[in-house]
Image 1 (cartoon, rainbow, N blue to C red):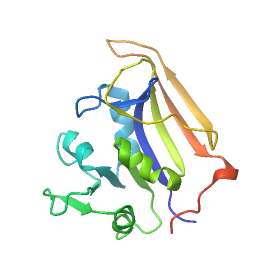
Image 2 (image 1 turned 90 degrees about the horizontal axis):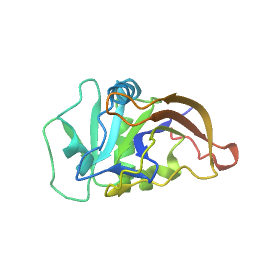
Image 3 (image 1 turned 135 degrees about the horizontal axis):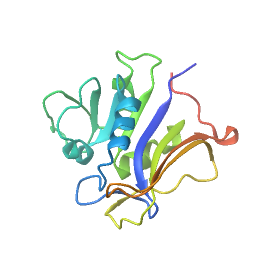
Length: 173
């Protein structure tokens, strides 16, 4: 069995995934879930997503896909194509899952290859500046965990989608 390509993303009802270069929410449980879902995995992201991180996240490989030739950052592996990023992710992780963490262009690029979506659905209309479409008919919801609004955080749900059998991509080996 090949590896899974798993999207890990927080998304508002209006599709917002970022605003002014950052994730608009800092919900403790969401950050903990992000850590659990990405720990020990190579993470593929765009340069702007990398720039929004507080620094290198321990226990995870950072593969940045960018069109900017010559761009680099300490501790980061740089790819200029999706194929190159996937090849890098497999170098010391044969058969292991890959986490795709954003942003919008990266999600659109990898969507045809994704096998699972781990979405934190933020129950508000954020009106940000980077968006991701809702999962379409080729995705099936398989788990949902609702959380009420509290301590200034909006209500949210942890939702897992898998690709419906008819739209299943070939697994990446």
